[in-house]
Length: 479
Image 1 (spheres, rainbow, N blue to C red):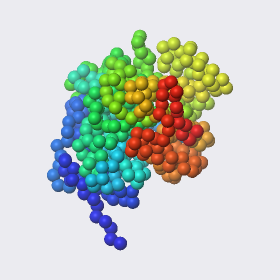
Image 2 (image 1 turned 60 degrees about the horizontal axis):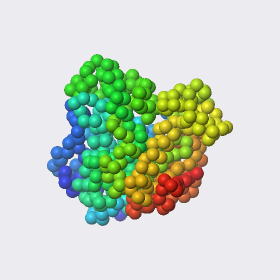
Image 3 (image 1 turned 90 degrees about the vertical axis):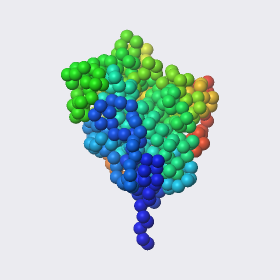
Image 4 (image 1 turned 180 degrees about the vertical axis):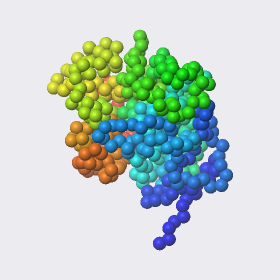
């Protein structure tokens, strides 16, 4: 049987050639904004000028400048992807669609995680084949990271990485019909930092009309830095670079130098008189906002948006188990974390101990990390959205325990992703150092979780009772 010709889609910016496989068609490295080079790294995203001829959409794009990440014995390459692949034109999306026709299918736009400093849509975990197979157009987004994306600089707009995601959503509105998608049925979803960005969109006025639904996987509605905290990071970065803390002074500095000073920024004490560190020292970058998204939903489109939101039951294990921290943690380590994370640590620490009377110091530290980084901010965002949206909030808790690292990784941060993308059977996710460990994934679990995400994108209902703060319903997934 002769091989079918590669598909060509006619977008408003120009024609693009993709690839066809058994799940549909894939178009890669589509620019949604002009390349952010030089001083443009600290400017708002601007539309791409387009191209003539047929653009090659069969190969991946460069990625945002980013450092390498090491998670000890755990193989996190499927999550972080190839790292930094240099090249200016990285404000791009990949599209995986059943067909580039007039099908007007539901669209899902994925925003990757990575602590606001790493990650890309090239990560193997974000394979869109199952979504395309099930009639969804999947769009995966790259955005600016680290200093170009999130350092708060006088003379530059704040939260440039979030502005990139907004620009990508405008691109989806204007272009996705070319790829068989319905621009009036868009679900934006993200994990970790990408979930925190997704939650912020709910409180962002400029996001109105760009999406109908949102999914927040292990993010936080309270993960933003205050302007005072951001100034502390900016001052430290400027001192390390030997320049004034302005966009003009940062503009000529190469990306390599920005990456070289990241260790200086790691572990900064960001506690102030009015705020604790919402990321507990995990990252010096986050959104910078005068109010937390969970407290500002009335400013954005949240009341008109369906929300699916949840966390994993052992989120903090990712930051301890691969490096042996679950065993080596002392009571002093637990107190140090609580002191960084809570204004008055005694009361929340007592509550954690009461809830886990037999917990080791490492298990207690993991619980505090999970609650501070994800649990508390997720609960606050869920409650706020339920109040403002009237029955359009669905909450989950993911509890399947990975058998990685001698069975200790558990239901850690990121473990839900293979189930959402329905790739939990892939060999490279297994083995003792693979994300899911040596045991096979439970039969049917990935199909059920992925199916709930697809159902939500289609209808706003993942298959369980909406969340009501007075009668909170939380669906347990894989527990």
